[in-house]
Image (cartoon, rainbow, N blue to C red; front, side):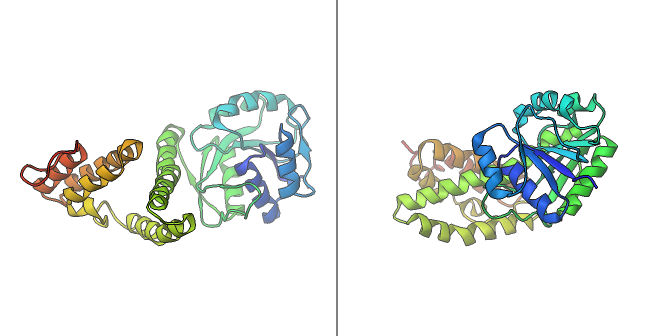
Length: 296
Protein backbone atom coordinates (compact mmCIF):
# COMPACT_ATOMS: atom_id res chain seq x y z
CA UNK A 1 0.00 0.00 0.00
CA UNK A 2 1.33 3.46 -0.91
CA UNK A 3 2.07 5.96 1.85
CA UNK A 4 -0.75 8.45 1.71
CA UNK A 5 0.94 11.87 1.74
CA UNK A 6 4.13 13.80 1.03
CA UNK A 7 4.60 17.33 2.46
CA UNK A 8 6.34 20.20 0.70
CA UNK A 9 7.43 22.81 3.23
CA UNK A 10 8.80 22.47 6.75
CA UNK A 11 7.35 25.59 8.29
CA UNK A 12 4.79 25.72 11.08
CA UNK A 13 1.83 24.66 8.94
CA UNK A 14 3.67 21.93 7.03
CA UNK A 15 5.24 20.29 10.06
CA UNK A 16 2.08 20.50 12.15
CA UNK A 17 0.02 18.93 9.35
CA UNK A 18 2.64 16.22 8.79
CA UNK A 19 2.53 15.40 12.50
CA UNK A 20 -1.26 15.27 12.42
CA UNK A 21 -1.24 13.01 9.37
CA UNK A 22 1.26 10.69 11.06
CA UNK A 23 -0.86 10.64 14.22
CA UNK A 24 -3.95 9.75 12.18
CA UNK A 25 -2.24 6.66 10.80
CA UNK A 26 -2.30 7.78 7.15
CA UNK A 27 1.46 7.96 6.93
CA UNK A 28 3.91 10.57 5.66
CA UNK A 29 6.44 9.43 3.08
CA UNK A 30 8.65 12.46 3.47
CA UNK A 31 8.96 16.23 3.75
CA UNK A 32 10.68 18.48 1.22
CA UNK A 33 12.62 21.37 2.67
CA UNK A 34 15.34 23.61 1.31
CA UNK A 35 17.07 24.70 4.49
CA UNK A 36 19.19 23.01 7.16
CA UNK A 37 16.88 24.51 9.77
CA UNK A 38 13.92 22.88 8.05
CA UNK A 39 15.65 19.51 8.00
CA UNK A 40 16.49 19.84 11.69
CA UNK A 41 12.88 20.77 12.43
CA UNK A 42 11.60 17.66 10.63
CA UNK A 43 14.09 15.41 12.42
CA UNK A 44 12.97 16.81 15.76
CA UNK A 45 9.22 16.76 15.15
CA UNK A 46 8.96 13.72 12.87
CA UNK A 47 11.66 11.21 13.80
CA UNK A 48 12.05 8.59 11.13
CA UNK A 49 10.45 10.67 8.37
CA UNK A 50 12.83 11.27 5.45
CA UNK A 51 13.63 14.77 4.25
CA UNK A 52 14.02 15.62 0.56
CA UNK A 53 15.80 18.46 -1.20
CA UNK A 54 14.30 20.70 -3.85
CA UNK A 55 15.86 18.72 -6.71
CA UNK A 56 15.03 15.20 -5.51
CA UNK A 57 12.57 12.94 -7.28
CA UNK A 58 9.49 12.48 -5.13
CA UNK A 59 8.54 9.07 -3.75
CA UNK A 60 5.46 7.10 -4.79
CA UNK A 61 2.60 8.59 -2.78
CA UNK A 62 -1.11 9.05 -3.25
CA UNK A 63 -1.10 12.80 -2.57
CA UNK A 64 1.18 15.80 -2.11
CA UNK A 65 0.39 18.65 0.26
CA UNK A 66 2.13 21.94 -0.54
CA UNK A 67 2.51 24.07 2.60
CA UNK A 68 4.67 26.98 1.50
CA UNK A 69 4.04 30.76 1.55
CA UNK A 70 1.37 31.90 -0.91
CA UNK A 71 3.82 33.83 -3.05
CA UNK A 72 5.95 30.71 -3.53
CA UNK A 73 3.17 28.31 -4.60
CA UNK A 74 3.17 28.91 -8.40
CA UNK A 75 6.97 28.59 -8.67
CA UNK A 76 6.91 25.58 -6.36
CA UNK A 77 4.32 23.95 -8.64
CA UNK A 78 6.56 24.53 -11.66
CA UNK A 79 9.45 22.83 -9.88
CA UNK A 80 7.36 19.94 -8.54
CA UNK A 81 5.53 19.03 -11.75
CA UNK A 82 8.39 17.12 -13.47
CA UNK A 83 9.40 15.40 -10.22
CA UNK A 84 6.05 13.92 -9.22
CA UNK A 85 5.85 10.16 -9.14
CA UNK A 86 3.35 8.65 -11.63
CA UNK A 87 1.46 7.16 -8.68
CA UNK A 88 0.54 10.62 -7.35
CA UNK A 89 -3.05 11.46 -8.24
CA UNK A 90 -3.74 14.64 -6.22
CA UNK A 91 -1.81 17.73 -5.16
CA UNK A 92 -3.29 20.22 -2.67
CA UNK A 93 -1.94 23.50 -1.35
CA UNK A 94 -2.81 24.93 2.06
CA UNK A 95 -3.39 28.58 1.15
CA UNK A 96 -6.58 30.17 2.39
CA UNK A 97 -6.24 32.94 -0.18
CA UNK A 98 -5.21 31.29 -3.45
CA UNK A 99 -7.30 28.93 -5.54
CA UNK A 100 -6.34 25.68 -7.22
CA UNK A 101 -5.08 27.51 -10.30
CA UNK A 102 -1.93 28.38 -8.33
CA UNK A 103 -1.03 24.74 -9.07
CA UNK A 104 -1.69 25.08 -12.82
CA UNK A 105 1.72 23.66 -13.75
CA UNK A 106 0.88 20.46 -11.89
CA UNK A 107 -2.66 20.24 -13.26
CA UNK A 108 -1.20 20.24 -16.79
CA UNK A 109 0.84 17.16 -15.91
CA UNK A 110 -2.18 15.12 -14.83
CA UNK A 111 -2.87 15.10 -11.06
CA UNK A 112 -6.03 16.66 -9.68
CA UNK A 113 -5.33 19.96 -7.94
CA UNK A 114 -7.06 21.86 -5.18
CA UNK A 115 -6.64 23.46 -1.80
CA UNK A 116 -7.23 22.56 1.83
CA UNK A 117 -7.00 25.36 4.39
CA UNK A 118 -7.35 24.49 8.10
CA UNK A 119 -9.07 27.33 9.99
CA UNK A 120 -6.65 27.12 12.90
CA UNK A 121 -3.49 28.94 13.93
CA UNK A 122 -0.18 27.12 13.92
CA UNK A 123 1.96 29.13 16.37
CA UNK A 124 4.86 26.66 16.38
CA UNK A 125 6.10 23.72 14.34
CA UNK A 126 7.61 21.59 17.09
CA UNK A 127 5.59 22.68 20.13
CA UNK A 128 2.37 21.00 21.22
CA UNK A 129 0.40 19.41 18.41
CA UNK A 130 -2.33 21.83 17.36
CA UNK A 131 -5.80 20.40 17.93
CA UNK A 132 -7.54 19.95 14.58
CA UNK A 133 -10.54 17.96 15.79
CA UNK A 134 -13.70 19.97 15.14
CA UNK A 135 -11.95 22.74 13.22
CA UNK A 136 -13.21 23.76 9.78
CA UNK A 137 -11.06 23.00 6.77
CA UNK A 138 -12.10 24.84 3.63
CA UNK A 139 -11.62 22.88 0.42
CA UNK A 140 -11.67 23.95 -3.22
CA UNK A 141 -10.51 22.75 -6.62
CA UNK A 142 -11.41 20.10 -9.16
CA UNK A 143 -14.06 17.57 -8.20
CA UNK A 144 -11.46 14.83 -7.67
CA UNK A 145 -9.25 17.12 -5.61
CA UNK A 146 -12.16 18.24 -3.44
CA UNK A 147 -13.04 14.59 -2.76
CA UNK A 148 -9.48 13.89 -1.63
CA UNK A 149 -9.29 17.09 0.41
CA UNK A 150 -12.52 16.16 2.17
CA UNK A 151 -11.17 12.69 2.95
CA UNK A 152 -7.98 14.12 4.40
CA UNK A 153 -9.87 16.71 6.47
CA UNK A 154 -12.19 14.06 7.88
CA UNK A 155 -9.27 11.74 8.65
CA UNK A 156 -7.73 14.55 10.71
CA UNK A 157 -11.00 15.19 12.56
CA UNK A 158 -11.80 18.44 10.75
CA UNK A 159 -15.08 19.56 9.20
CA UNK A 160 -14.65 20.19 5.46
CA UNK A 161 -16.50 23.14 3.92
CA UNK A 162 -16.35 23.67 0.16
CA UNK A 163 -15.69 27.20 -1.12
CA UNK A 164 -15.84 28.70 -4.58
CA UNK A 165 -12.50 30.01 -5.79
CA UNK A 166 -13.90 33.52 -6.26
CA UNK A 167 -14.78 33.99 -2.58
CA UNK A 168 -11.45 32.87 -1.12
CA UNK A 169 -10.03 36.40 -0.69
CA UNK A 170 -13.08 37.46 1.33
CA UNK A 171 -12.98 34.24 3.34
CA UNK A 172 -9.29 34.68 4.06
CA UNK A 173 -9.77 38.32 5.09
CA UNK A 174 -12.42 37.19 7.58
CA UNK A 175 -10.06 34.59 9.02
CA UNK A 176 -7.27 37.18 9.26
CA UNK A 177 -9.53 39.65 11.06
CA UNK A 178 -10.65 37.02 13.54
CA UNK A 179 -7.23 35.50 14.21
CA UNK A 180 -4.21 37.48 13.02
CA UNK A 181 -5.52 40.98 13.73
CA UNK A 182 -7.08 39.89 17.01
CA UNK A 183 -3.63 38.61 17.97
CA UNK A 184 -2.20 42.08 17.25
CA UNK A 185 -4.90 43.83 19.28
CA UNK A 186 -4.51 41.49 22.27
CA UNK A 187 -0.71 41.84 22.32
CA UNK A 188 -1.12 45.62 22.07
CA UNK A 189 -3.57 45.61 24.99
CA UNK A 190 -1.14 43.48 27.02
CA UNK A 191 1.66 45.95 26.31
CA UNK A 192 -0.53 48.84 27.49
CA UNK A 193 -1.13 46.98 30.75
CA UNK A 194 2.57 46.30 31.27
CA UNK A 195 3.11 50.02 30.73
CA UNK A 196 0.95 50.82 33.76
CA UNK A 197 2.55 48.33 36.13
CA UNK A 198 1.32 44.83 35.28
CA UNK A 199 3.89 42.11 34.79
CA UNK A 200 3.72 40.44 31.40
CA UNK A 201 2.37 37.28 33.01
CA UNK A 202 -0.07 39.26 35.12
CA UNK A 203 -1.33 41.17 32.07
CA UNK A 204 -1.88 37.92 30.19
CA UNK A 205 -3.76 36.41 33.13
CA UNK A 206 -5.94 39.51 33.42
CA UNK A 207 -6.78 39.59 29.72
CA UNK A 208 -7.41 35.87 29.21
CA UNK A 209 -10.94 35.68 30.72
CA UNK A 210 -11.83 39.09 29.32
CA UNK A 211 -10.85 38.15 25.77
CA UNK A 212 -12.44 34.69 26.00
CA UNK A 213 -15.76 36.08 27.25
CA UNK A 214 -15.77 38.84 24.61
CA UNK A 215 -15.16 36.35 21.81
CA UNK A 216 -17.90 34.07 23.10
CA UNK A 217 -20.31 36.99 23.34
CA UNK A 218 -19.50 38.07 19.79
CA UNK A 219 -19.88 34.59 18.34
CA UNK A 220 -23.24 34.07 20.04
CA UNK A 221 -24.64 37.40 18.82
CA UNK A 222 -26.39 38.35 15.61
CA UNK A 223 -24.69 41.73 15.56
CA UNK A 224 -23.57 44.24 18.19
CA UNK A 225 -26.25 43.56 20.78
CA UNK A 226 -23.77 41.77 23.08
CA UNK A 227 -21.10 44.46 22.81
CA UNK A 228 -20.11 45.97 26.16
CA UNK A 229 -18.03 48.95 27.23
CA UNK A 230 -18.02 52.66 26.38
CA UNK A 231 -19.01 52.29 22.73
CA UNK A 232 -22.03 50.15 23.57
CA UNK A 233 -23.10 52.74 26.18
CA UNK A 234 -22.45 55.72 23.93
CA UNK A 235 -19.93 57.04 26.48
CA UNK A 236 -18.07 59.67 24.46
CA UNK A 237 -16.23 60.95 27.56
CA UNK A 238 -14.60 57.57 28.06
CA UNK A 239 -13.64 57.38 24.39
CA UNK A 240 -12.00 60.82 24.61
CA UNK A 241 -10.09 59.72 27.71
CA UNK A 242 -8.91 56.56 25.96
CA UNK A 243 -7.65 58.46 22.94
CA UNK A 244 -5.84 60.96 25.15
CA UNK A 245 -4.08 58.05 26.88
CA UNK A 246 -3.06 56.15 23.72
CA UNK A 247 -1.86 58.54 21.03
CA UNK A 248 -0.07 57.55 17.85
CA UNK A 249 -0.49 54.26 16.00
CA UNK A 250 -2.37 52.57 18.84
CA UNK A 251 -4.83 55.45 18.93
CA UNK A 252 -5.28 55.18 15.16
CA UNK A 253 -6.04 51.46 15.49
CA UNK A 254 -8.52 52.18 18.29
CA UNK A 255 -10.27 54.75 16.07
CA UNK A 256 -10.43 52.38 13.08
CA UNK A 257 -12.05 49.56 15.07
CA UNK A 258 -14.32 51.94 16.98
CA UNK A 259 -15.53 53.48 13.71
CA UNK A 260 -16.73 50.03 12.61
CA UNK A 261 -18.50 49.54 15.92
CA UNK A 262 -20.22 52.94 15.86
CA UNK A 263 -21.46 52.39 12.30
CA UNK A 264 -22.87 48.99 13.29
CA UNK A 265 -24.47 50.37 16.47
CA UNK A 266 -26.15 53.05 14.36
CA UNK A 267 -27.32 50.61 11.67
CA UNK A 268 -28.78 48.28 14.30
CA UNK A 269 -30.46 51.19 16.15
CA UNK A 270 -28.80 50.22 19.41
CA UNK A 271 -28.00 53.85 20.30
CA UNK A 272 -29.93 57.04 19.70
CA UNK A 273 -28.72 59.71 17.30
CA UNK A 274 -27.34 61.97 20.02
CA UNK A 275 -25.11 59.24 21.44
CA UNK A 276 -23.96 58.17 17.98
CA UNK A 277 -23.05 61.76 17.17
CA UNK A 278 -21.19 62.06 20.47
CA UNK A 279 -19.12 58.99 19.67
CA UNK A 280 -18.39 60.20 16.15
CA UNK A 281 -17.16 63.53 17.51
CA UNK A 282 -15.05 61.80 20.17
CA UNK A 283 -13.39 59.64 17.54
CA UNK A 284 -12.29 62.79 15.72
CA UNK A 285 -10.87 64.17 18.97
CA UNK A 286 -13.74 66.49 19.83
CA UNK A 287 -16.34 66.55 22.58
CA UNK A 288 -20.03 67.32 22.28
CA UNK A 289 -20.65 71.05 22.68
CA UNK A 290 -21.01 72.12 26.30
CA UNK A 291 -19.49 69.02 27.84
CA UNK A 292 -15.81 68.69 27.02
CA UNK A 293 -13.07 70.66 25.36
CA UNK A 294 -11.50 69.41 22.12
CA UNK A 295 -8.34 67.40 22.48
CA UNK A 296 -5.23 69.42 21.62
